[in-house]
Image 1 (cartoon, rainbow, N blue to C red):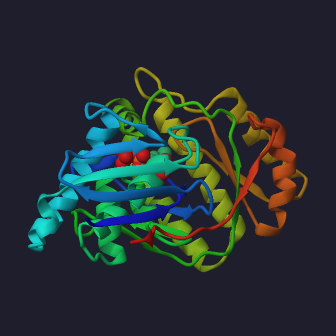
Image 2: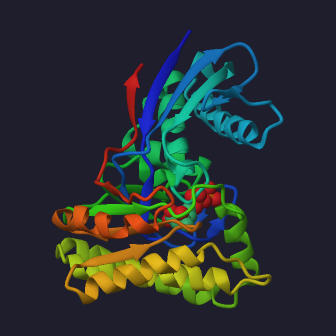
Length: 328
Ligand code: DP6
């Protein structure tokens, strides 16, 4: 019986992915850029088995009708399709998937990214596919778009591309950064990223502008990284996050991911800057805020922002590794 275990970490985008050009293949409307974290790991074991596909999530065996089991099953079908193309005799096997998430699930801490990156790595190894980083990134993308970036070490650019072959993430050099996660609410979000993106494309009048401005932000971000210009990286990150929330807020009916507590953190970060501490904030499709800083300022900033966190503590995160097999 073939089995593999892999670990992957969430990533937080500095230039965000929000919108698909191709829903089935998950090709984004624009590129994005992120930092892979060094905590909140997902560890996933895939064991090939003759029984039906099964999913155990954080110690609970999920029913085969559960939406998570179905999403994992659809992803395994893609992996089996690749195994079949390569004539591997594993192609017919079902799989037992066991996954443990250390971070808060579905609260804007990007658990689908670490989840599908770990699953892509574990499943491709268990089925006997020996994928290089680019092909692993392409595969992870099919599970959840942002997962293609969690395959990558430290900092990733996701090239939007216009086909399955051309849409993948790769590593980009960037100056050393810290992130400070301020978890203002750990509950599940009300509108999934997938549904929120669909609503934005269908109803937000600012969607076209969002697509153009994201491409511009990404080009600028790549330049700022090459110049190791922390200030510019921070400015682009915060402005871009606000633009994403603006295009989402403009949906009909409106969608709001940020909560009053989120805005308090954005205000506190602006105040830190006014006092000479360089920090910049961003937020994904949920109320939690992630602040970026130079590594040497991170502890001080975490100390100042802890009061806004649900549990009274802001957490310092550093660049982490891409998805990897931990035990084949
Ligand atoms: C706001 O990757 O979760 O975190 O491709 O539909 O699975 P699907 O969406 P997902 O969206 C992430 C959106 C985001 C921004 C980002 O990570 O770039």
